[in-house]
Image (tube, one colour):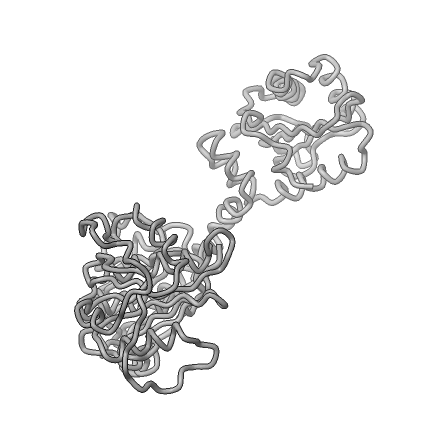
Length: 448
């Protein structure tokens, strides 16, 4: 049984009474005021009768007064919070700060016991209680209780902060020892930026996040922000994409060495520390790596195309997986090596109306992704055509196994032009980025 199923925000209260019996009565009275079907006199009598048999104190700082009512056909949970504490005749002699009232169906004794156990597990640890008591409003308390992941993030700040402080210290030492140009840090793995507030560093931090915005006002060290255009990537894909965007923005060069610090998003812990030498990694990571990495494609346009592509890969269209190609950049040359399979749906519209940087165009792109052919997009993000057939005349090396006609077409068109191509695999949901006839980046289907 889940506590969240029986609790609502209007049944979370701050308790004013400082003695046991008045505090319990206050909680019962306020609960009955919210649940008008409850009879106040009968409910209060049942709770007090149960309390007279055995104390509802269960652990330091917590008590669970409860009762089973003969005419109640459901379970009702209310929570009373007392930051100042309630004198409760507790076994440890300390005040109670959390009162959890459980009212249940007298005919469902087994379920009543299961709910009691669930409530006890939720509130038993000191760190859990501290998280709730540190909240500043009823709404915040309810959010913590209603979203277990929020409670998880809040209940162990001292442990995670300690680990992060240690690993950040090692990263700074390592960066100095290997003469790293930058430290690549995934801020999504942190609960907050507190471990960075007092950090002193001459090495530039590249702060990676899939969330907007990120508050860096109180950071005293040099830093730049890398926005991943979507979340849900695995660790390896996060690093690969962060490196690509850092290179495309000119934050890093092919000769740089960096220290990378990553962790699972929302875990609160940085758990992966690596040294990456781009002069050694680039031949594998970006096999061709032309001097002008993106040609005439603006970095913001590439980020937006990748965001749209991964959204299509994750969601499909009308419940069905789809695949398509976005050819971006060097439009005049690409146009000579393509022909329309259908009437171009983007012909006749202004550049402003068909810019991928306009969020309102996303649904249109997703809809036209269901038709055969590729999108042709200029480097500034203007969609020039959809439903086009690519016909590059070039002999390509054997593609990796599992890649089909779309990937061959994308590799071919980028081999003979200065364009990029983003391909969505209909069968696997992978998103691949091609440049100069090679796979530059391959992203697994994002989760979530």
